[in-house]
Image (cartoon, rainbow, N blue to C red; front, side):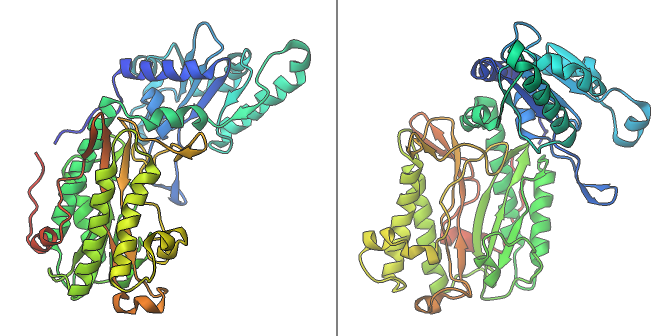
Length: 448
């Protein structure tokens, strides 16, 4: 499978920036690249571009800075990038340089990064407020603070320069919440690769295998299918580890009679997949394991069925929550009226998290879950996970003793369409019988 180019077409980027500039009004926005991070001393982690900068510019280089000027009549989009330099490129590879950066991004003007300190005050001069995430990048931080100080000193008499700082998410979060066709295509591919990798992991699963070996199979399948790599730290939790929501050590063995929970997602063109499947290590659920598993998968199915335009994200959560509470009553873990128990949050000892989060450039993509004092209403183009779970860990109450050590989560990636929904991760089944059939099957056929 071929990988996409790093950036979207220039015209697509122009459309996004036009929407952002309209919302800026008389303000300006500064978006710096993500910092290079170090594992130790001078050993760098693999670089991951800043999502907001990439979304509006397509830039993936360290050191880049974009300036959007809602107040300006010309040069409304300006970029600063590292200049071409033989020594730096010998060690870290080719740089764009200002000329190519302007061509690739559609910038009105592009300058070497070392000119930003000199040019930034003039670029911000006519703005009345500034969108910038303080603390995001030290060098940019210092320049922004200086620009604010200058505006404060001259603003009273000249009325020039920004007086306040606002988080860029105020504008960009809402834009990113609704995905365009090119974004949906990348998310669809990320989910397909993720589903293929889960099938590969299920196919090789067996007692005695290390959690880390399952992780290796998943991430090898990501890369061999054209993904950038994992979208987040892969979770492979077997036995009691499956009851730890964000277990990432992946350092234990898969043991016969246990369940293993795998939460993993591929990054494709910087867009994230996020899928969870839970399976019996030796290929057959015990009666109690199957009871819990089918309860969780039924909650997933109910929540997915609820996804459509006009439904609130709270209603999606409640669809899963009702199934789980009624099931906990049926198993004897809870006693009482289902609606009263839900109102009392009696189920939260076993189901402590929300059933959904937004998915996109970030695995936990931005966007408010409430709007105008109520729950967010779903619209076509939104992408969310559906991931109910039940966890009977060491801390579970005594009434759940019969299920202690069982942790189950089942998660799919779901696109809201014009008339309903599309499960992007349908390439790996979730039914209990299907899961049993896949475990140990060594089914590793790559997606087309």
